[in-house]
Structures are given as structure tokens and as C-alpha cells.
Image 1 (spheres, one colour):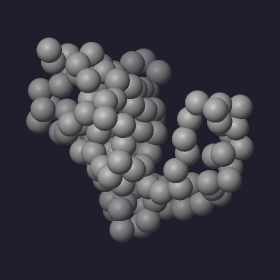
Image 2 (cartoon, one colour):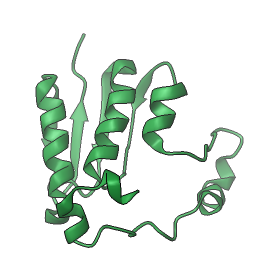
Image 3 (cartoon, one colour):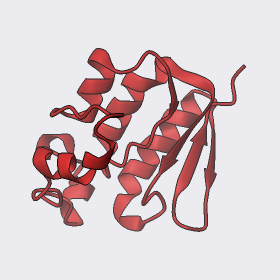
Image 4 (cartoon, helix red, strand yellow):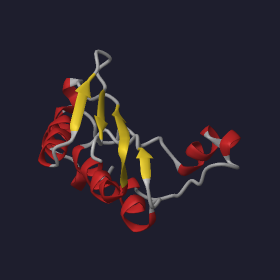
Length: 130
């Protein structure tokens, strides 16, 4: 995640560069046994969802760890989120990710959507619209 897309808090708790060892090649290797069923794109998640993501999304798991990229992903995906769709969020209740949590809560509250905190420090957002 570029530093320009991080909050000052995210930088101050040591998240800058935390995914520096991630790579497109590593992602491909990790899911190679599913290569006949998935497509991997080498670009930022929010851009993929906004530009040419699927027409309908029933389950989305944006494990991005940062506030702005997560909101950008939601912005791209939300118009296509199906009724009954779910969105699990990892690391949600960890103090280190409080900016992401606050941004996500605002995003879902502004749209009247339901979220449930889990004792595992995760959160699940649900689209309960008709």
C-alpha cells in the first residue's frame, strides 16, 4: 500500500511496508491449485473492483488492513453487492487497525447496513436489503 494511501496512525503503528514481501508471483503460487477456477490480476484491489469487477458480488473479503484502500474497494463493489451478501473483515477489532475499523463503521452506518463484531476480533458486514 503506498504511503499516500495510509493514515498517520497506520504509519505510526508500523504498517508502512508491512506487505513489502508480497508479490504477484507469490499470490499465483498460493492459489495455483485453483487456477482453473480463478483469475488473478496484478493491480490494486480497489481499481479492479471499480474498473471491471464482477457484475454481482455475494461475498467479498477485502483483507487490505488499511482504511482508504478498504473504503475504495467497498465503493467499487457496493453497487454490485447482492441482497444477502456478506463481507468478513479480518483484524477488525485489533487496536493497530482502528482507522480501518472507524472508516468501515462509517461506511456501513451511512448506508444503513448491519455489522456484527465477533469474539475472534473479526467483523461481518451483511447486506440485508431486499
